[in-house]
Amino acid sequence: MADQRQGLWDFALQLYAAPGVGEACLTLQDECRVDVPLLLFSAWLSKQSVALTSSDLARIDGIVADWRSEVVQPLRAVRRRLKSGPYPAPTTVTEALRNGVKGVELSSEKIELAVAGDGRRGADRGGRVRRRCDRKPCGGAAAFPCRGSGREGGASAGRYRNGACGALALCI
Image (cartoon, rainbow, N blue to C red; front, side):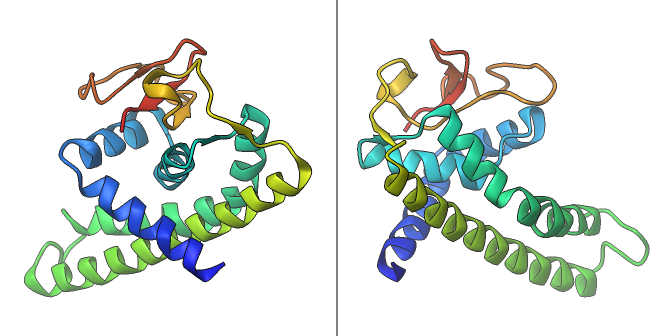
């Protein structure tokens, strides 16, 4: 179990660091409220030729929802706020604090990925995970409905796009 979690984490870090992917993920997060850890988790499954049904994804999203809303998102809000204020931020001292919060935020996202992996294994036992979805662009790479402003495609068009099934997908 630990090896699979580390494999997922390493994959997520590598994919996020690929040219244009981090920016596309942040655009999806900010404009469409896509949960980036779940997006990266879905991309990891896609690389293994495994796709989640929409009900699987909704169930896993429900499993991580409280963690995301009570831990990950508040940490992100603090980190972002420290970039420009409140007083005495931004200073060298508050930048060190901001970087510490960023590390804790990243750790919280690593935990979310591990919980998503645990939730997916539950789907395996229930027989609800299916093989690659041919209806998604890029052969089934990480697709999510746009839950935010209604914008689709956004500033990084080409890195993600609408799929035949009406979902946004990050093309890996």
